[in-house]
Length: 291
Image (cartoon, rainbow, N blue to C red):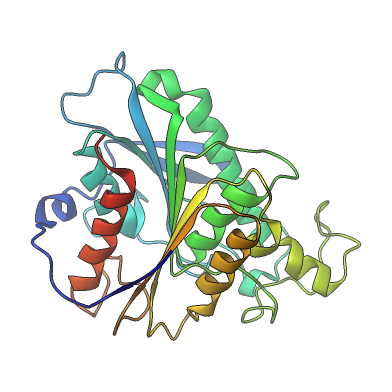
């Protein structure tokens, strides 16, 4: 179903979540070029590892090439989606925000391209699943969210099936990059030695890296949320993904928010005010229901 939302403020106080945007525990789940890459756990109040909590995984955006370390943090501890991880931890989820290597030269640097960012996300997921019992995380009750370039990576985690597969109840994609038909601002590598990309033409690499082109009959339910006035990632990325899901008879909802541009979900970054951000969170809450 396609849903249109008017831009109106919601009664939702995000101040506590914003003030607690740092993870309760950060783990260096791998090292690349001698640099640690972190994931952060946000735990529910009165956490008990012997209890099974639903799991919510977050993937930040930033054009695959940037991440956010706040002034009150010694290193990466959750990025701009840290506040949202805290918000859902307070609702009873074990939340994990994952970082990944930053791509170089618009993804043209060997070993630091989009495919490498994706494989970092896979390694992060493998860590979270392997250590689920330590954090009371129910991997059979797992949700996934990504924003912008993180929306691409979350879409890839949900659709790519050539290597590792993960079972999500729903994936939430905010202003996602879903395809590379036009190379999308030079992000597709002109050449690559990566085992999955070597030998493919440019057009084949673009298709291979596009979640839109990797949708299959077993893909999980998807919820797409896009600002109608997004000038960074055109809303047609979400519309095409929605149409492709429909072609496979897969459950998918598309939400378009009027008068809204890019990065509206990032409460500590957006210049548009928090009205659209709150609408986005309300959409997630409605899709998840009671925990």
